[in-house]
Length: 259
View 1 (spheres, rainbow, N blue to C red):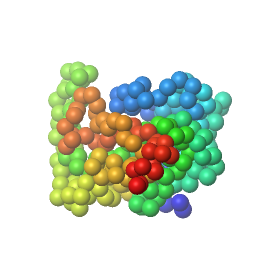
View 2: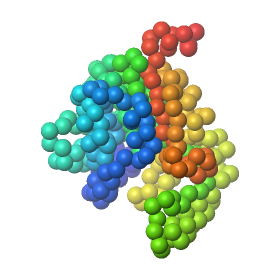
View 3: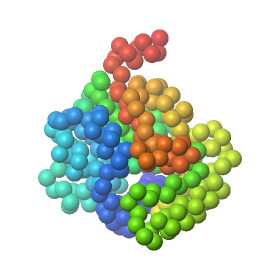
View 4: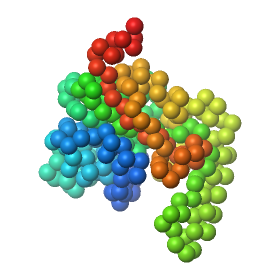
């Protein structure tokens, strides 16, 4: 993939610094990692960014490889974790990795949505399947095309934080309704939007109904789907993104599904 405006954002020092400050796993990630990843796996952490998921996955892995198409992000990871392996790699072309090299591939925090063509996303899914061993695990997330609101997360809020979070959620919800409701991507459950994050980025958005057929076409069985605010928010209209845990089909299973 040639240098594009999305990648330019991820090369900037400001954006690298922003992601370097984010180190906690989301509860939905913790849930899926604990359920579907095992000790001593070989793990490819695609779209590693500044290394938010690295501490958890590296401790779990027999061999850990972090990869990103942003040179600035890769360099940040190498400085932060000098004893670990990081590669410059585009998710649509993983030719530097052998077929069946990994037990698990993780592509967290909606990294796949930065790929702004259907062809590129199909190549990414095919490459993820190729580098996985049969039965290997693929965990990733994608923005919800039909999100209309932001749920105020009040469990840990105290004092003035409660009304502030409610006000902020109402404001953001009004913005989401104006941006999404009735638009083509909302009606179809998939499409491309201009997200205001980091000054404006082009993102793919989807729903489980539109994403699961893409995964099946690439040779994956879907094991579990959870919302981005799992376990606190289960309503689809307040779900910012979905996380998917998938298993690469065995050769016989893949052949049967195409028969």
